[in-house]
Amino acid sequence: MTIRIIRSFFTSFSNPATLIPNPSRRYFCTNPTVAKRISQYQYPLQFQESSPQRNLIAVSSLLKRYGFPALELTNFLEKNCRLLNLNPIKIEKSLKILLSLKPSQEFLVSVINSCPRVLEYDAIKKWEGGIQGLEEGSNLSSLAVRNILEVSVKFELDYDCVLGSLRCLKDLGVSDITVNKVLETHPMVTMMAADKIHDCFEFVVDAFRIDKVGFDRILCVYPGVLAFGIQNKFKRLLDEFKVLGFNMEVIKKHVLRDPRILALEVGELSRCLELLKSLKCRESIKEDIFHEGAFKAGYEVKLRVDCLRSHGLNLRDAYAVVWKEPRVILYCVEDVEKKIQFLVHVMKVDIQCLVDVPEYLGVNFEKHILPRFEVIDNLRSIGGLGDEVGLRELIKPSRMKFYNLYVKPYPECETIYGRFARNAEVRSQHPVGMWKLFKPQNNPKSKEDIMNIKSYMDSLA
Image (cartoon, rainbow, N blue to C red; front, top):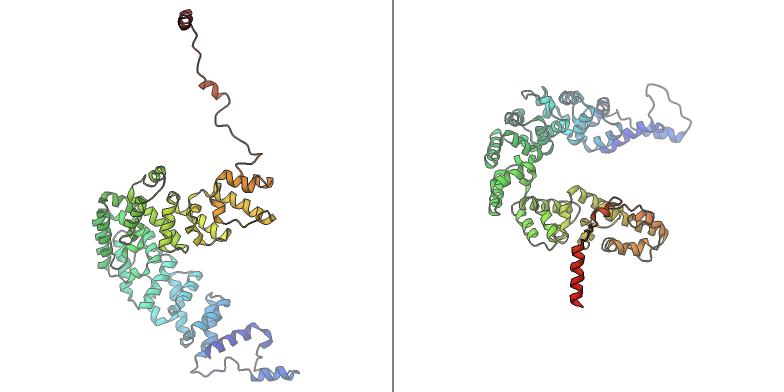
């Protein structure tokens, strides 16, 4: 019933034909149908004092005045009808507290949308004085402050508990950038006690023999290091690395280079290394894969597998694609993402086709994939293809075979294909006249040499 009244209230003020006249004035209407409809329409303000709908106009006007979008107001009040039970005066106090934390209209709207309970004064009044007791607390980003408020209101945390966690990070030498990164991605850290944060810090510092700067670097790239129970996972992960034959110096070097290594699950690196040992490819490709060591090579496999899984492949198919086409490991993750985006959104091919044609990820995008697709797309548009060309027919043929099949019979496609175009400029590999430097010199023959040759020929005769 409340939702219906809210919707009818906003509809009445958005449609001029349904506006209610001022009851203090006389109203004359010649149309009996309109007069009957107006007489039967219940004016929104005619609620009993105990009804929560009496606050509808006051709450909506208050939110509009503080910058809440009018177009979103109807849906917002429909989903949060309990706000109509609140006192508008206390709602305004809550809005002022939010603006004191971050004087930004964008912040105000985002925090209200994500957590409407911040409008309840009893839940937000503990933040009335701002983030006091935290040095340089104003450097917290809007997203960080919003996450702090959401966790605080949802779990009814005390102000001292939240402040203690933030102050503990500051005391450990964590920079403002890292604190913001932690609060933006893992706001549940505000529920951790200070002693647990200290234990995690000491474990990481002792295990990898690093200083506060190194810890700040690890925490900034991988804030999940402060997750609950992470010490037990770290111990098992370090034991696995040692069993695989890696010493602490190698582990420390790679962890400081990319702290996301600590996000590995136990046994994940072992499986990646087993895949690399079973590769059947050219030795030159293996040398390029292992040129920075087995640890880095195994982690690179893990990144490619995660990339494929994020686009819809299951774990087994992702490992199969990397095993069948190990050249994908030599391309950076951004290039792999670019190829997959082109495959799905431009070529309109299902991601599952990579299981049958993994070579797509092992060839160059600009030199191999793009020109071939443009040729096929051009032939498809002019009706030059007898049969539909799939991903296998696009990638598998050699460059010369593809040229003879799809480019040579159509001269207009030669400029698209590039390398075999008739008008393409062919650059010489060596400067003009370079061959003269490699021509062997003729040694002059002396009279003695000539006499020796003649005497030898006479002996043969």
